[in-house]
Length: 163
Image (cartoon, rainbow, N blue to C red):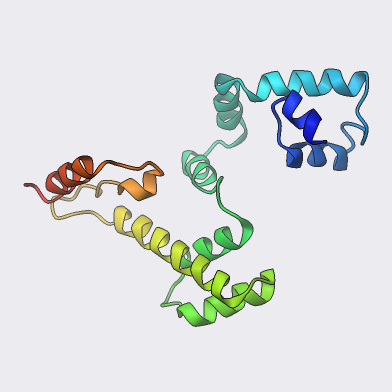
């Protein structure tokens, strides 16, 4: 399985998904190899991915949410959505116990997930609120997923505070 995934530039999870859906056989041969070859070429084409995403998810907000949550696990998505949709304050201990119970995670791992997603949710809510001049606030470097050098962070901080 690992060999085939490497050959066609796919993950093993993608192959298991295709097998589970009945698209390919467990031991691919002939026709299945042609399918994998075609899918490998398509998945590497960014233009096709963009077009496909635009076509399947009409709402720009849903597309943005989908892209932001790509790298998240199920427990992380659950916690993030709980914080984003919360009408009142959510206690960290209660939510970490909940995540630990439902996803069968150790308490310390669940607590780490909750803390990480709480920061991410608060940053998202903070950016949605208008600033003093009525404009949306700039995105933080951590939210964009990239890392900045120290000089870039200092410059971004100065720009943010108008200095």
